[in-house]
Image (tube, rainbow, N blue to C red):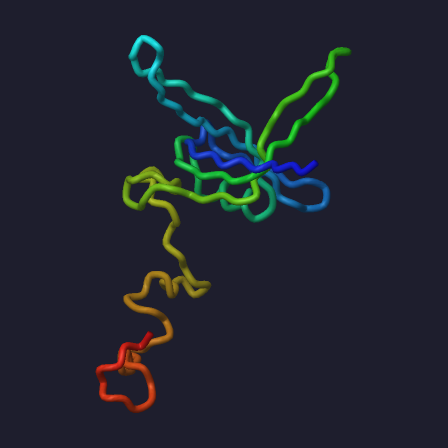
Length: 166
C-alpha cells in the first residue's frame, strides 16, 4: 500500500534556535514552532488554539536558522513526521516531531519580522574581506559598470524595433 508523509507548517519560533554538531560534523538544531488556529465554537464564539511542534533542522538549514532567526520569528517549514521512541525509568516513551526538509523565513525587513537583529531586519549587511560593502549593497547589479550602456531590450537581430522580446 502506498504512503505519504508530508507536513507543511506556518508559525512562530517559541525560542531562539541553538546549534550543535554531531560527531560527523553535521550541524543540527532543534526548534519549537507555535502554530495558531482560530475556529468558531459551537456557541458561535471564536476560539484560539495553539499547537506546539518540535522541529529538527539539519546541515546548512540549521546553521542559517541559528544565524538569522530569533524567538517569535515567522517561519514556514516543510518536512516529514518522525516518531522517536525511548525508554526512561522502565517506561516506554514516544514523541512525534517534524524533520525539516525545507525552511522559508517569512516577514519583511525593517521591523516586519523575519529574524535578524532587534528590528527584525533579516540579513545583516554583507561585507567583503577588505571591509567594504559587497555586491549586495551596491546600487545596481555587479555585472554592469556605470560606464557601460544598459543591455538591449529588443529581440536581437534586425526587426523594426516593434518586436516584443518574448
